[in-house]
Amino acid sequence: MSVDHVLRLTTRFQIGTYLREADVAVPAGSTLAEVIPEIVTLVGAPRISRPWLATTAAGTPLGPAVPLHRTSLDHGAVVVLSPRHEGTLPVIRDAAEALVEADVDADTRGLAAAGSVTGTLASLILAGTYLPWSQALALAAGVALLLLLARREVRVLAPVICLLAAGAAAAAVVEAARPEELTHPHTFGWAALSAAATATAVLVLLIVLRGTGPRTAAATATLLGLGAVGAVGAFLPAHAADPAVAAAALVIAAGVVFTGQLPDLVIRVAGLRVPRLPTAGQDLGVADNSDGGDGGPADVDARARRARRLHDGAALGAALALTPALLTVGAHGGGFAQALCVAALGAVALHASRHRQVVPAWSWMSVGFVACLAGVWAATDPGHPAQWVPALACAATALTAPLWVPRVPEVEPTTVVWWEHAESLALAASLPLAAHLAGFFVLIRGLG
Image (cartoon, rainbow, N blue to C red; front, side):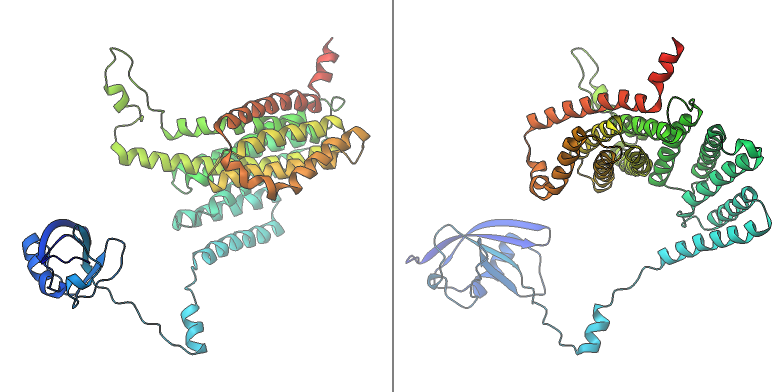
């Protein structure tokens, strides 16, 4: 407590965005209520309609009617002055009022989208009663397209339209085939390629008409691309490999490679570039134009958001394509099938560990979980005692996930580098394994 007649203080005003400090000397026998109006005039602080609240720098309230020498203030102390805000008193409600207050307004936009999808399926069922399925699917796709053009906000119809168009193309190929060709893998291969080509054309049309967003477009395009790669497996000779297993192996190989190349790909598609530092003697404007556009920071932010959405959609589409492929390979069984599943697990899980965004992390880790199950499944039929070692390792890794997952964000940068090397090794190992399951090595030996 100060015993001087004059107390030297630092007054700090905090009124919204207004911040101002002033060093003043006030009589020790005065109160804050007496000196605050003069300090406000001296500093030029804005006038307020609420009473002033005086606190210490730590937030302890000071009594406005207490003489300064009886407070805890000393020479050099800080007095923070801000408008006083009264706390809201709790409102006492009965049970009925509490239930009404707790009710949250529902968003009915999802119901409208669900209704549009239901109507599209209803039109498909009605058309399929009197028309061939290829024509019924095409008619339903046309109905959904007209509805999307009328109500652009119902973008959930975009993947439905692509799916119906793909089904119409595939059904047309199957319906045009002769009865003895229906069991031939080439027929289903041509049907899959026709479906992918038709759906791609429809997707391009929807993008031009602005009927779909970047996330949905990226997911659909990725799913169609990997599906087209898998369709190639149907054209491989039947003596080399099972067509279904060959198609699944090709999808896994393409998906694992796509996983590593996706970040750089979406950056290029979105128009972003890594900032460059000018070399000696080079124009300094190189660093200013390294963002790839001339729209300023707002343009860079918009393209960054577009890149994020493209990455989310592509990761989701790859996960949808890889999941059935891994399960098909796991159901095939055998050492090579298990090795491919384990290699895919390592490549995808190590890649997912470096993601901090929700959609890519969940997409890649979901693929890793499915690869873990497929690797264990491959050891059961036909099983070999040696296959139980990686199967038990996969099961133990999944069971102990609550112990090691919280430590993943805390790993050292050197550990992350080693993980990147391990991811590259897993990716390199998956390619020959997929080629073996697809029957490429058998075909090469047959050429000799």
